[in-house]
Length: 233
Image (tube, rainbow, N blue to C red; front, top):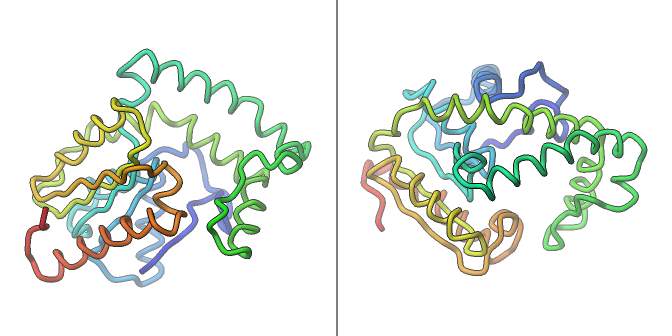
């Protein structure tokens, strides 16, 4: 297994703009090549990471054996409905001021981005430190600012063919979000869609119980790739 921090996030130095899907997928391609990590890969993406995983799969299809997409973003989530457009504008307005609040130490003082309580103390402290760092907050805003470009790039991609695809969705999301997750699960005929009742967008990664569903989906896709068998619904 290989996990990494995108440029400007976590331990990684900042990268060039625009922070859109093409740029981020290119950087991942360079990273994997430079690290000598042999493919093909099963890509796992959560939230916006799902958009980047889809772009990588479209640009480098021979390097991708399967995907696991966890409560991931739909390229029309901010344009399809009035609620989505309103959410985009709200986040955009917050993004205009939050880097300044971070530089002034306000974000750290009020613990604006708290880490999930189920995480071990060391990892929780690391995440809270990163979440209040000027570089990480600024990079997050840059990625969100590139949303129109990213969504346009991902919309232009084709289906995943018959690559194994597991979609894991949070049951606490709205009905419209879950409908879009169903659409995304149709990117491959060889797919499964698990809706975790009571789970939230974050708990699928951090909650001890909910994250087990995510881990199981990853293992299922890896097994399907290794055995060349379709996913069991």
